[in-house]
Amino acid sequence: MPAEDVPGVFITVEGGDGAGKTTLARALTECLRRSGRAVRLTFEPGGTALGTHLRSLVLDPGVAMSDWDETWLFLAARASHVHEVLIPALEAGEIVLSDRYSDSTLAYQGYGRGLDLERLTALNREATQGLSPDLTLMLDIPAELGLARTRARSSQADRIGDADLAFHQRVNAGFRRLAAERPERVHMIDGRQDAAVVLGEALDVVNRWLDGRRARS
Ligand code: Z5A
Image (cartoon, rainbow, N blue to C red; front, side, top):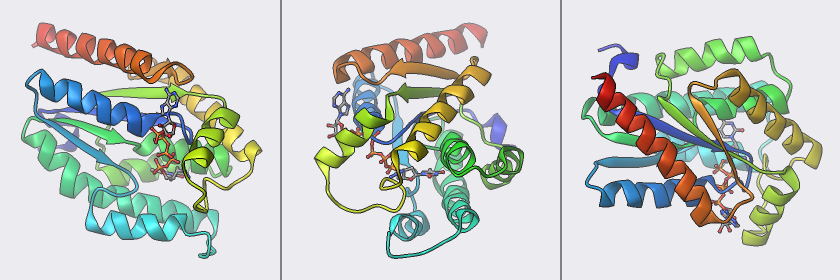
């Protein structure tokens, strides 16, 4: 079955550091499960044994690498995530919620590091076998606030999180641009709001999308 024809529902949660993606993805999973749906919660980089190893490598501040080296590691983690986790769960008809996916590569390595966006888009297509999200919930937050949140939570050094403020501002502006270019898929939510308000907005978007799909089928 071509990756784009799988029967489940593929939802991604995206946004800059500390935007509240993990908090939202977990709460949304609980709500959807309570309404009787089969939901797989997963994340990038990670979600597979290979992805877990690559995650610790790519975030390790003690490991020097070029911007393209960094990109290949995220893409390798994504490729294993797609064939080991995402496609099987979608073929089983589950709702799959991924905390980060291919938009993160465009925002961080494209807009943040300045790598060529067309090339990154083509590489994303190869790594994902063409699997694109049905819906993306994008949390928008000023970089200063997102970094203050992550730094209050943990003092552990992280090769990408520790990049300077200007880098994170470019990343967040990149996410906004991606959302503006893909309004049919990407829904922006103000990440400065209380977590319960963010969850309520996300649930509305997801339920509307699911109702729309039922009506279309
Ligand atoms: N990366 C990349 O460069 N290219 C790629 O292709 C991919 C990733 C896939 C690891 O990702 C890094 O990899 C990341 C991008 C890069 N950059 N860094 N570093 P990650 O997703 O594991 O790490 P992260 O972006 O730093 O996410 P995070 O720290 O897990 O933040 P978050 O998930 O958006 O937020 P959170 O964990 O839900 O919340 C952070 C804190 O804020 C926590 O204390 C919460 O309790 C609090 N919080 C959450 N929501 C709220 C609200 N609404 N109000 C107040 N406080 C809140």
